[in-house]
Length: 341
Image (cartoon, rainbow, N blue to C red; front, side, top):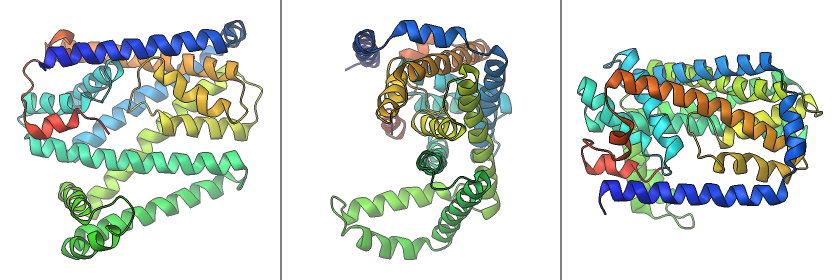
């Protein structure tokens, strides 16, 4: 199938999914109550949430620039990241990652291999931050620990262990590749050959950073970006002034951040379902959740659209060219990224 045909199929599937979710929402959700919640929103908190979101996108792009060893300008990585977010918000399967590689290759002649390695490392850090957000949500949601300071210390210690393991793996590459596949290959549904390949690709990508200092810098950037993204979720929730406890607000903010961080935009409808379905099952009002999802997505979509249009003006290419992937080289390593996570 041609690239344009594949894009039309993806758009059609996305539209069908949005329509199905919308129809289900009409049946299950009390939109009069949702409207009441939206009218009570505090615009001051919404403005603060928007600033947090913008700051998070800036830091997120700076982290990627550092992973590319600063071989691009700040503007190039910022605009490439925003174009990728724009396309990911429109199409499923995260084709924006491959687009980012193409953009920096086009503007700064960064090789496909280097660009792909940087994306692999970026995803590794994103998954670590998701895990930390999940841990925080479980802690606050269950009430196991009431002290915010204790939670921060525990999460920082957990992150320190992960980074220590990564540094050790880089320094002991041969030992890892010789012993770990044999051990992990004994687990259900894991084969020794596939584990070896996965570990080799991960270690090859980590070599891009090559030093504990660069890993520490990427970690700091990740904390800053996700801290700002958390602020975006939390202050959006504060703006709606729901009658829920502070502990529930922290748990809900961390939970939604873990599921749909701004660095991985979701389609309309899918975005809302990912908030409403799991958290309604935990006893939170569906009208509260849909109002939260609507405002959260409206702010995020507006920011991504604005930054994406700015990036299009900067680059001189059209949205049609992006959606048809016209001019994007069909290198196998790039094509693999179209499959998403």
